[in-house]
Image (tube, rainbow, N blue to C red):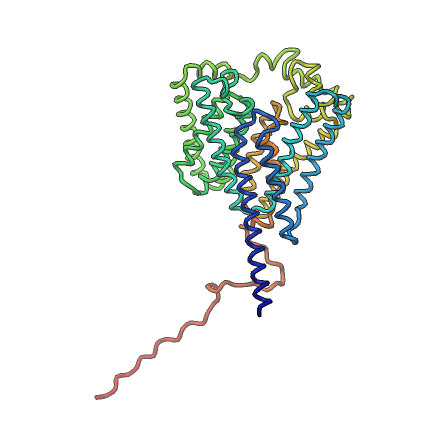
Length: 437
């Protein structure tokens, strides 16, 4: 009897330890998401927080001998590792240069977030993903408030070239950071989860931040991604879909009028940015012409030219993560990134088909918005990009359950619910004859 009691106490203690480690790891992860507002230094404190979550995850795995690392988490680790090996190999001839050493270190810290996020998310259930989405919305609201305040006051710390950026490196990174929050607000509003007033206010604030970043691709990607999720969720209800789209259009008009009335520089900056091609996009040294110039370099340099070497040839970087992966890090880096991006779409679709859980679609659309922005900018240091890659690949369908009815195999016994069982009709009540007086 005493032995059973001792085992029972040990079991409770182990279960409590597992819960404490899991909760601590998640709490540090949420703090890291909030700390993504500050990226003005590399390595950043947020990098150290993500490393800490990974170390705690390793402890968590030791407490569950039967809980194994998922194949997808291992696969995304191999893809990111292949990308890292490619840029190290390409940069070996220039490894003695101090800027190259620092760039390699900063890049490694950034992409490692994808690995840390995948290992953390593989033990998450739906409520954990939704908690992450709420924390991410809060983080983006903070960023948007800082960016809006910086734009209105034209504070140099919070702006770049008169464009809002908050405490993030540049307006383009800032705008892409806010896009997934808009998708998450649409997710909760569509499902009726949370306060509609708070979520609508958060959505308006996030859209305002994207607008004040004056990043052309971020504005287009943000609108497209929000509409994409709303269309997906309401694809079988066209009337409701039209009402929601009308509401978003009205919200956009109100934000435009508000920004125009509160800042005299808004209209001038908007008209200056309201074009598909600026002066730095065109010409022999423009962005689009550089795309054509690097194609022969990709064909003749299978190993790549290395980090920071393209800037010695052109006045600016290539500003395209797809071409940058090939020309800077060789064919291995380019193939690794293309596989990672295309594989993320395939994995997300399979996650949704298996579970019927729209969290998988929300993560995919949020990642797509960031990828759209990095297709015209240097998105290799964007922590949100690698974070969402990790979350998509770390999504564990085995823990998410399923909302779709399972198919019944032929010949298998079929279980019938208790309220569906046909019972024989109840006998009619027998009427008793009154006794004679």
